[in-house]
Structures are given as structure tokens and as C-alpha cells.
Length: 258
Image 1 (cartoon, one colour):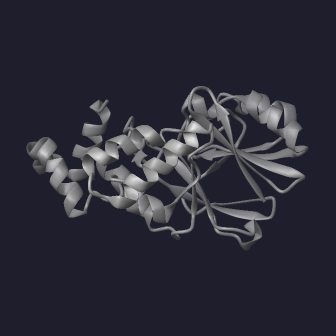
Image 2 (cartoon, one colour):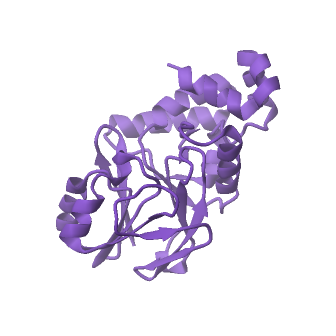
């Protein structure tokens, strides 16, 4: 199986997974990068997986469905381009010999889902397509969900196997790591990873996929119960921490961080 991030817009990634004959794409906000990649790789589109309803994740769905006949899958409780197969927690999507388990991960949007595959058919490490819930070094903004929902969603993802490849939908890594170092300045893994990502971006390469093990080491939103992160949150806004908790304070801090 070949896993490819397809750049779209300013900083989106549409993920493609293919076996040399057929392909899956995830969150195609724009059809053109997908059509170009299908031609370049010489594969046919079999399925489209959608994590949530935002246009930069769904804008290319209708065109791709009409052009390729691919089956579309998406969250049960969000507005989606019809027709599609709607999914809830625990559902399985079987395609290309792979089995993707559907996880409910509300927070960024109310009905956001993720897709996790640990199938041996991958001939590699597990894969997580997490949309805008988890980013490398960060997490999505809370447009519709609550801090408690997002924290629960992130803790659920953080408990997946450490080798899981984390396929986020945006190249936000450098900005996230800059903030993470404000929160967790004495974290050696974080400093080393930022240097690595700076080198990757200087070469025009993606910083993704990440891994669950790495994110548990460097991502302050997965480390909100660690004493160093808690102390930084209190330094930023002790009153906010006492009223809404560390995670909510971190998210508010990041919302206004430049």
C-alpha cells in the first residue's frame, strides 16, 4: 500500500492510499489534485472517506463521485454531499482489502469522525485519518464542540498503538510546534522534532504523517495533564485554569497566539 499526501489549497492535505490498482482518498476538498494523482499513479478511485462537513474537506466530493463512480463514506450527523454511506461509532468500512474502524471524535465539529486501520494488509504500521481533530503538535479549533469533548477525543486517539501513522488534514506543524515550545520549553523531543520539521519544510517536504508515540511526546494538547504543561497554562491564565481547566485554557491561548 502506498500512502501519499496530496497538497491542496494553501495548507490542506488530501490523503491517498492505493495498492497499485485502486485507491482511497480522504477529505478531498478539491477534485483536481486527486484526478491528477490518479492519472499519475495509474489507479482507479474506489472510495472517498470524509471526516467532517467543512468545505475544504468536501468541496471535491461531488465531482470525484461523478467522474469516477467512487463510493462516498462520511459522518452520520453532519451535512454531507449526497449520496453517501453515513457512518457512526463502531462501523467498519471495508475497501481495498482493508478494514477501517470508525471513531467518533467530536470537538472541531459536532459530528466529526476518524478512520483507523490496523489491518495486516497494510504491510506496515497502522493508519489514522483524523481530519481536523488531531494535528502534529496541535489540535483543531472548537467550532462546534466543547473542550471536554475535544479532550476526550484526543485522549482516545492518544491511546491508539504508538506506531500508528497520524494523517492530519493540514500542514500546520511548524506553527503548532512554535506554540508548543512556548508551553513546554524544556521538552528535548519537541525541540529536536521542530528542527527536523524545519529541515523538511525547507526541502519542500511534508512533515506528515506523524505517529501517536511522537505526538504523545511533543503535543501539549495530549499532555495537558503533565505538570510542566499545567504550570504553563496557569502562568498564562490561572483564573481560566481554575474555571475551565488546563485543556480549555491551552486552546484559548493557542486561538490568540501569533
